Amino acid sequence: MQIYDPAFARVYNARWAGFAHRVAPLIFDFYEQTPTGHEHKSLLDLCCGTGQLAGYFLARDYRVTGLDSSPGMLAHARENARAHIEAGQARFIEGDAADYALDAPVGLVVATYDALNHLPDRAALRGAFRSTHAALVDGGWFIFDLNTRAGLLRWSGVNVQNDEDALLITRGVVVAEQDRAYTQITGFTRQESGLYERFEQVAYNTMFDLAEVEAALREAGFHRAYCARVDALDTPLEHPESESRVFIVAQK
Image (cartoon, rainbow, N blue to C red; front, side):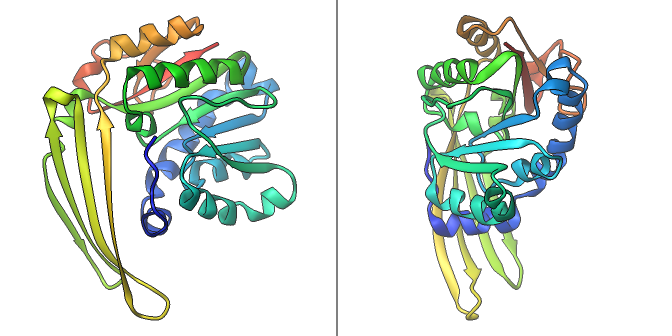
């Protein structure tokens, strides 16, 4: 799993919380309408990053565990959820999404913002599915999103964000024969002292065949798995590979 350095984690925490804020209410509403959601107010935020999605569920009295491989991301998650941690409602732990275990099962596991695209290969993805199946109560739900091959093939290009607090340059490169899309993010961010700190982060997305993803979920023990849009999580897509991003909904 990719590990992000502290400088990038600061930028992520300050600038890229919007995705979590958009999808958290939709996942919450879907789960709350299920029988498992009525009984089990517990969440594992897998690849939790800085804990933005976890915060939405914490504010609604869920017991939350966040797991991530990046100490820099976890430091921000713990600070963002300090009151909930002190109350014993939340914890944030370092671990590998491809091979982890919980000490008590949860009703819902989520992995958002194409977190599982950051796994290096299909073996790691299958490991994540096996670990997640073991982490869920019977009838529990696993909801995660993936950038599709069609979406990742459009990653090539350069984007520049320039404002008073930061200059961010993002370069996207697609290597289709490796089933990979790479993003190099170079930036300068303004510190409290007024000085600017430089950082550089390279991230990759692995391209996964969605039919293979659904088959691997069933192989891991999930009895139901389908692709959907986030604003219609209860409706399977007929042609998911034509989407740029899909959410995969699976039930144990």
